[in-house]
Image (cartoon, rainbow, N blue to C red; front, top):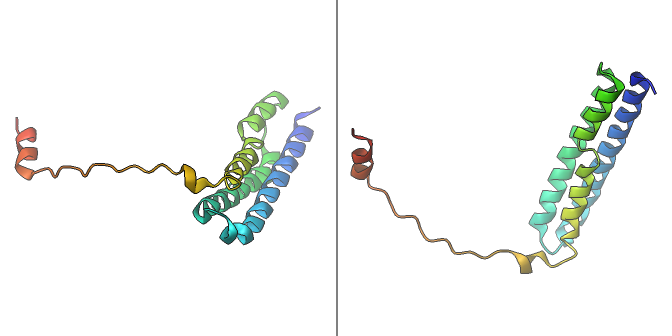
Length: 125
């Protein structure tokens, strides 16, 4: 397969993936208020929309690249076009588990106030 055909097919795949992520983000926005942890839903919604737009842009610009077929395959695998939806669905699956049970509750000690004279003493030669 020559490079221009490969780039066109890869660009089409990127546009498909980006559009599906964008539609997923829109549908997930309607479900977000009913999720156990709405803030986690908001992060999935925002990330899906941003990654969908990124992949749409990559797909529209992809056929304009002037590279060999080998470099096109390497670059396409580097765009993370398959890992992007997988990470979004992985985050979404955390809603099926009650995520608030697994939230880490830590009580950090309050930082000690630093006094200006001690900072000046450290900076002085």
